[in-house]
Length: 18
Image (cartoon, rainbow, N blue to C red; front, side, top):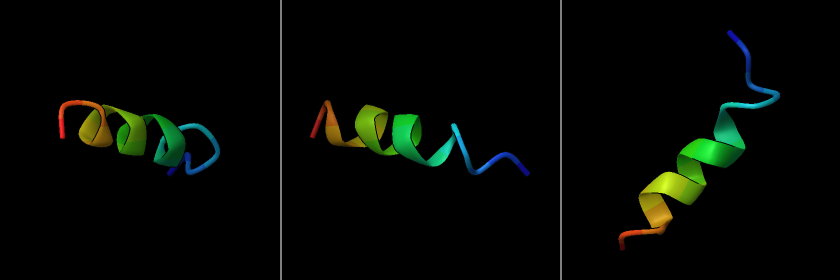
């Protein structure tokens, strides 16, 4: 459970195409 470098990139990938 690595929330140190998985919560930022995930939000960027989902908010990028939106």
